[in-house]
Image (cartoon, rainbow over all chains, first blue to last red; front, side, top):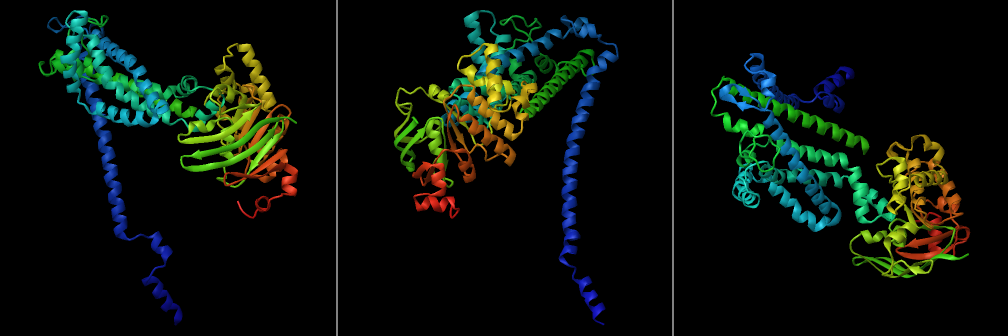
Length: 313
Length: 251
């Protein structure tokens, strides 16, 4: 008689291990709800990305497929849409050259500032430079462009003659804009070097400068390059500020003082003035595709470099 | 035997805290001197005072003198670069640079101005051989030093120190991160190195102190309680606190 009774109590009041194995339905429900929520958000992201990729790609290659524009036409330097000449090479080169030059100006400045913040004056250097870089990031690009337009362009005009608009003005504005990116990534890279590595160098009789130049910069090179490439990618994609100071002419970008154009400036200037579906409008999409491909290349490059850095450390 | 390092009335403060009190110590040339004592007793701080690594820590103040070959390392004329060239240091954690094995060894000679490739090759081979590592790494001198085991890394770091030709080597618990076999090899190396170098070693391991050192100093709360020949200190300590410590009653 005792046996069934005890069985009954077990059924009505399950043991702790059973309770843990079978959570309450309410817990299961919140568990499921959380999973669905995160699942949906990640898929929304993926779907948005891929629809953008597909949309831009199909729009971008359409004029070539339809035969409205040939590759040799597109990759030439003659831009005259009214005569069906859609040569975009000078804009592609313009984008590349202006971003590379901006990175070349910013890299030594940014890495130098990062060295100052981490190695030379870690206390007050950080206290001042950290908020400075954060504020620089927060300033909207139209403000950078406006300042460039009212300060840098007239300055160049007075010092070097010409219009003032052009490659140099674009490089100056962009190099200031990408400086914080390079600084913050370089700071992170230097800070990730363990203290005992520095001590090892000092204990061998190295001076601070020797430690910085021969050990720290060398070991953090992949990380520093990541910052520079990231900055370059940002410069490459920047439209508004560049368009305001670059001059927007179709010249080849081989002179610092001539007005030129970039892919982004051409797109922003003309997207509203062209008829949807016209060849002119489609060619703008092809330029957007070029921008997209270049950005992807930058990202691949950065991924590869960070992977190499992680392997080294 | 000549005294290599003479410490007189040495005090060290971290801000308001006094970490070392009236240290008096004569360290003999080409001997191994062990510094033992419980954690926080100041033995590592003292070791780092000898090559002035404590200068890197803000708020450190010292009085008194540490003389190496009769010259006070805390005098104003002391060139820190020269001091650290003469007084090498091996740390608790093996700290090879994230460079190749070859570049790790060549780092020191290069910063002191040696550029000749042949000379560097010769230094690399000689110091790695001295550190009993040459046979293990001679075929991969140009691969990353981070691929070595902990014990190999520690011997690499010792070879790196030897490459700048010091006369004193300071070791801060060099075996604490190593397995027993690597520790044994390291201890063999230390005994071998004292033929040519004056070695000061901080250790938590009393058997290790007994095995490798000629002289032992027992630190407690920033003071040297007892300093004598290792044999005597371990078999017949004159201070009861030393006896308590080495017999494991505290620490």
